Length: 300
Image 1: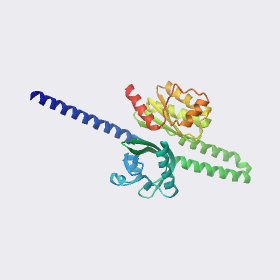
Image 2: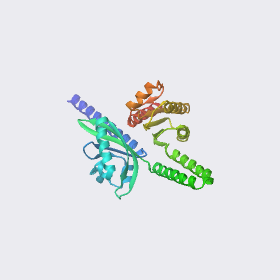
Image 3: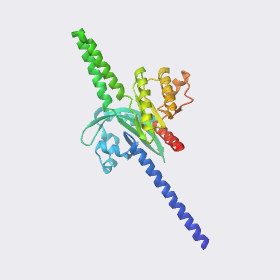
Image 4: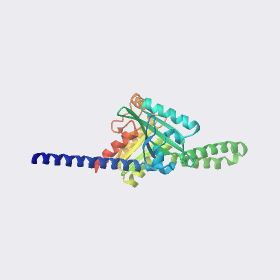
């Protein structure tokens, strides 16, 4: 009887330990999700939200109870609603999808976001997990740039003498556009993220390196994630600049992870004989974040 009591006590102790481990794991996961700079979401492919971060509630104005009753399409209207429906289907079929659309808050405000979505399967159920980044500043800069170009064309025809001043204003606006198009965010302790969107020309490449190295120094970062899923064209110029940026980060003591490496990008890199063997690459941002957290743990 005494042996049976000891066995029961041991089993109870092991159960409590396992429950404690699960609780700590859940709290750790929640802290990571809530520290992300944008909105995080997870929902059933044919149903509603099952998980989201506090930032999502804050931005949309919906409470936790209200969020639990919503489906993703409830947060979009018009053509954006059709676009998001198509991107969800794409994520289910292909494994991932991306889109720019206006998120509609509870109060009716429309906020432009860049969304990423990845398919996950568990227990015969399909889920979509992703993030959204506010691109209001980038959209405003793009609109300002377009307006400036139109104004420039008009004024050149009317007053050639004002061309120099108009060019100066255009250059200033282009600089402002580039600055907001290379955002750096600290998404977790000593982990910084740079989501690259649009064409990476020489000026943006230089700004990317300068901005990233400054962020590494300021935040004492140990891992930098470069997400290239938003870059439409991958060529030797872009690849070489990414390699230079990764090497510069390494010289400052920070590891570099490149995420968003699609099948097409992989094939292009191989065809161009570009050597990325010394740089960690991942297909998705989620995988890159998991690797970065593991790196931080190993370096602690």
